[in-house]
Amino acid sequence: MTTTNAEAVQRLRVTFNQTGALRYVGHLDMVRTWERALRRAGVPLAYSGGFHPGPRFYFASGLPLGTTGRAEIVDVLLTEPLPPEDFLAAVGPHLPAGLTLLQAEEAALKTPALQGLLRASVWQVEVQSDEPPAALAGRVAALLAGEAVQASKRRKGKQVDYDLRPLVLAISYQGPGEPGWHRLRMTLRSEPSATGRADAVLAALGLGEAVARIERLQLIFAEERKLEETAALA
Image (cartoon, rainbow, N blue to C red):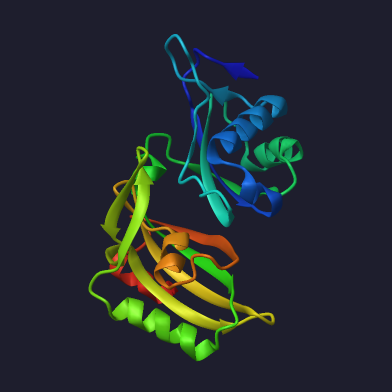
């Protein structure tokens, strides 16, 4: 059930996993996947006004292509109150494999956008390398000790240089995992104007060409803890 004119009366904050083959699905396609699932589930989804009304659900942060997420968050606005457990039961069956609902809870209807509250994110990176653990741990220590770490990214079709170091709040070498693999844990700044990427950190460590499995473990918002405390998560 969808209503374009009715006002939203409830905001559900939904936490979900995005895993498996969905790492190869871009964020815009993921938005379409969610919209289709919400329509098919028949939940009373709120829509924006105007000539081109759109469904009112908002992600805290889209996952970069090639990564997975263990605790992603989306806010869904509804025009009729719906118990969170009923929402989960209705929507879950319409989501593709790899997209799993973990919980839903009511949030304040009038609240700042999650994207504006996001401050940092915690990542687990497993990278394939024949280097000994001491060498990789040394690379991590050198990155943390550096005052600046030069990196580049494409913006509007052009390569732009920037300093990656302020975006790395914490990083630690967690040791070897399965044979030939090593695990890193990173806490990266995640703000609209300053977002650190795990693949950029790998490139700065000299591992940009290595096979890697990158998973976002947690999103950290302004009201949860101060930025300087996020290092404890790494």
